[in-house]
Length: 171
Image 1: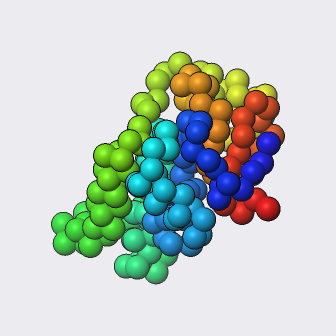
Image 2 (image 1 turned 30 degrees about the vertical axis):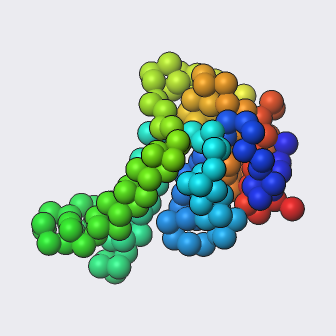
């Protein structure tokens, strides 16, 4: 089931996918920004995973590196990060965003570790639902923690039975 994230009442636990954090980090979707702001000031039972935060970290780092590179590839970014001065410039936005994640944790957001059994289960979820493996791993973590709501821009989750997808772009 797909619903608008603006309408999430906060009464049920919700898993936050990378897209919501990236909308906030790059200030590209006011609904996502507003939702994370609500987590800071209210008692929303918010969860995410270490895997989600790795996805967010990687994308923030690559976006930051694009300010210093003509062509952004993993190899070019690795080369750029060899220089400590460049490292500081490229990773500064990421460090700043991780400070924001700390604030969300202080407000009550929980970060769930990914377990080996989650990855095994993710393969089954991917086969059943057609999700890519990272998204299927998010689903495994959600089910392990009995979370049936997800905040995401990723419409692929809408095909998964027994969860509610809260999207910032849903009508």
